[in-house]
Length: 229
Image: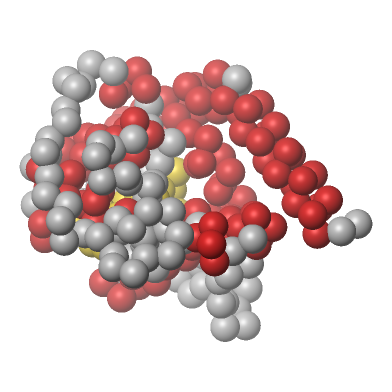
């Protein structure tokens, strides 16, 4: 089977899986609400949340990344998380995704000293890997992944198998975010842009990009599992 055929099959399978998850209320609504309620009822609190990035076009933030950031801000004010690691480099646009998200979070009241930036990741698995390394460096002992419900499910196996310390999943709950006023702060992005930028699609083939999403670009240094935090 050629690489092109493998890519074609793999891409369709991923797309079909995502559509299937999106159409299932358990994964998009019931599971996120259950995890959130458990965290609130048990008084759980994590040293930091990992928030994966999303492309920014320089004009307005996408509704998906907006929901991720709003969710992290909500969990911070609830005391469920004490710090936020925004993860993502300049991948598809010249703007560094982590820094854009952090700028929005600051505009919504998160103190700068509680925001951390991971700017190397170009794929979702790398968001987790590099953020975990940053957490080790900063001395954090507990982590939660705060993202959308679909990405949470797609990364669940990865977070369960490759890290010595557990990474809790707290995907955003739409019903909790719906009452939040439509917040659209204006931020200065003039210094968040990479010069001489080359987008990922010009550096990787489609097949390489799919493999990267599955973690092929991560150097584990011979380790199957990263050490505990």
